[in-house]
Length: 291
Image 1 (cartoon, rainbow, N blue to C red):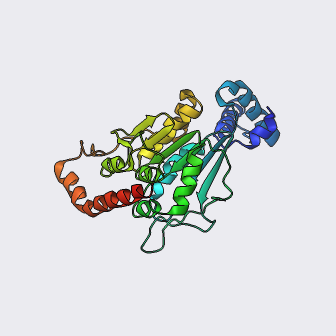
Image 2: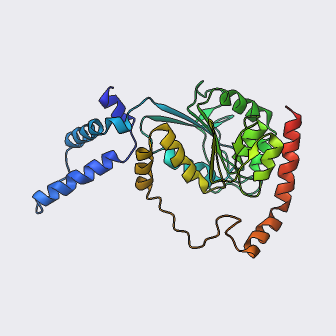
Image 3: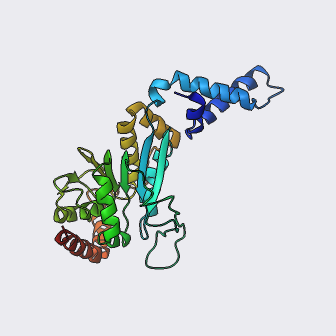
């Protein structure tokens, strides 16, 4: 392994942690004259740290393709992306038809935080370690009937090491024919729609069936990302990433699933999403008629 080349690929906190440790040791030795270490000293410390943890951080480059599209939920994308970005020696592609920014609100006003794709479908690497699809309505329903998107996902899904999604992104995978006969989950109020797409609806924040990995709604993306990092690298590596992100959920209310939420809160959302459910079922049936 070319250590200097590999070190340039790293974005993980080892540089920061090593730098901080060096500062601390120098401060203890010379409290009256604290100086930042030289770049050479920081680089040498970083390379030494890499050597020490080579069994943990080594391995081939990991190539990740993440679909972005108008109308997706931003958190569906950003949660896993934050986790994946902590990987060493990785290559992440935000995939769309072109390189124009896509919005997380469609139709409607201009997106508050547009996302700029990095790679077109045509430029996507032939082999992906991870193919990922976020959810989000109404964009999900549009993608379920977009021939270009479905053809791209179907082609890449045949060779990807892991085919994955979060929230209603599983409905898009299903519409592309990638979940037939697989256990999968989705947002809690659309999970049963998966049956229309040939999948086996399964409760769970993260559902793994062979190389298909699907996460539940929205915030499950962080849990999903950590689980996938454990599969790609190791549990210790995933736990280090979790600590780096200080992901230690302590929600103020115990209402994060329909089983835990109080009846009024659950019924409110059921009534609000009645039209969405009907649309999801209708879209899924149309999608299956094309296969």
